[in-house]
Length: 219
Image 1 (cartoon, rainbow, N blue to C red):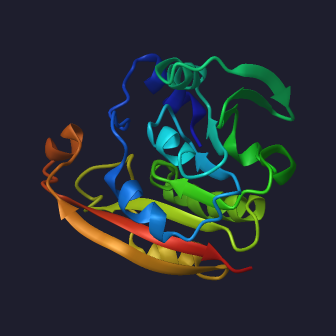
Image 2: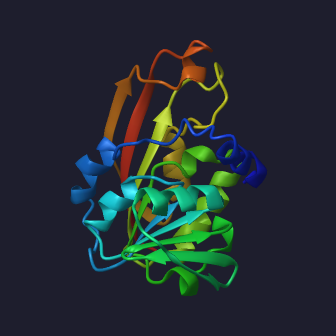
Image 3: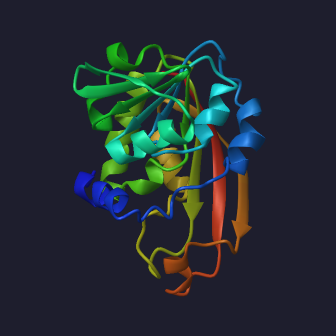
């Protein structure tokens, strides 16, 4: 993962990927996930997403992982929370109430650091990664989470010959390759929309498909 690319975007406040409201696919499909509400939910590459506050109303603990201190500070400030800050392994841990955000590299994450994770919400991590990194990301993630963990993974589909990501296009065939050997996969939603990022429309991408997958780790 190109850490400098994302840190520079936060420094420039070039965060068109950030939503000021809760993701509607999260609201629609999380109740159908079957996640254990007593186990922590992991949000990889969380930014300052408002989705974490929504998830905290469904789960006892929400654990985000994020590179940018600016994003983490913004999340707690906008949530009117003052976190306690300490070090755990390779991470700086920010913790307040139901929220923990680990500042550091997602690939350094281990089960002893994050706890027994029962669910994952991935809105922006898989689509942020170049194709060559996705298999390593999924493998690492599945090693960290508990057996029978439930994942809600949101991806986008479009003609990537017209414009480069991020967010990158992730097609159903790739989802099957990434998760199929160790998980049950179900496509919950595949909906076209004309609400595309400005740099997409400037390159001729008039619509994208928003897809949502329910995934259960089985081995």
